[in-house]
Image (cartoon, rainbow, N blue to C red; front, side, top):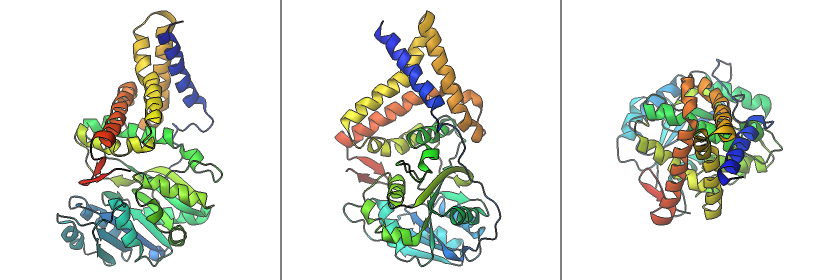
Length: 369
């Protein structure tokens, strides 16, 4: 029995396991869409960290204006060098407070330092952490608040609908969500007794007192995957968390170029592997078996070709629900092996930057644990 035959069997086995695991992480069962409710938003403050977000901040704040006229919003200007503050003020949001951010201390990530500075001004029971490039459909905050209160959820997170207009966005952004759900199955993350905890940092509703008791953002001050780390800490302290997809929180950041999506993934890929060369090797081996070997097997004869085709078919079945949710052409499912290989390269690039460059780069800052 050849190595290629064994590897092909393993590749098929990986996808059969993904397909039939009870929690079926590839399915879209956890989602929340906007709905007009009678929830009082006086008890909610939106906290937005912003660093050089002049192109997006107006649309983000305008969408908050549609939620409630008197919605409290705190924007922390993380030492922007563009017209972020000017653009924010032009919206004339009634209850907008702009906090000038101070110099980034050693050991902190920029976003978490901005959030920590803004957190100290929060006086409401609930806090909504919102990225400066995300717009919310009318009624969404009320719907999130209603669900959190109804189910006693202390941290509720929505994975924003990424922009999927350019070719690279259509090809790679649905896969970004797909792989995230494989790493952090939402159905398991939402179970109180599960050790898995996930959140999407672009839109997180959190009880202010829970965050205060956790020590604010300082305990996770240097975390690059800060959203999942925060969810893990909330859950570890006995509280319920929930994560789902949505069409009602929309990321307007453009990823027109391949390099822009590469940077997005590269920034945290090696962090996911805890900066471990052994885990990197295991990851590359598994991804090679799952994505490269089936393509080679299809070019062979007999049973090996059949196993390769079966693997390819199961990949399509698993990827289809995400494509359907985002109203994408189902033919993109045929490209999953190619996409998987690209994500392998992103991960290798992430490890390269860690060992041979300054580390992860974001907003012209470098982070290296």
